[in-house]
Image (tube, rainbow, N blue to C red):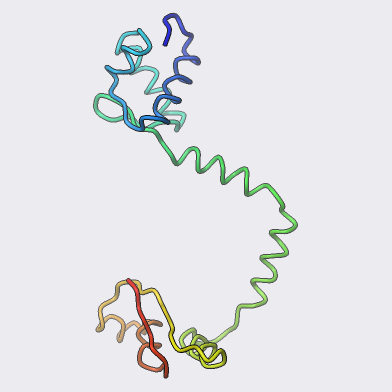
Length: 149
């Protein structure tokens, strides 16, 4: 890289380098940018305060959340009317009642031979006491029920 970069240019190079390498020691950045480790520490501190990176003892880690959050914000603002229509349609499909009974009714209506469910990790006793949906379906369904943890 080159010497005599202004802070904004250095930080941009640090961010680009971290995007590729994910974890970088301060000493390595110091050599690459031809500046002191104290300068790198100040840059990393500034970048951490901006949420761009996470500092570690002796270096930095690329903060992937920042890119994901920025992408999410951009996508969230696109097609608002279509998203409202989809939300309204989805809301109209939600039925009241016991979820276990609704799932079993749907499986029977569709002549399903298997129901695959996720579990929250409750033990059998907790499932009985708390009324786990997957536990209830496993005992009431007439077809095979597979519970995945």
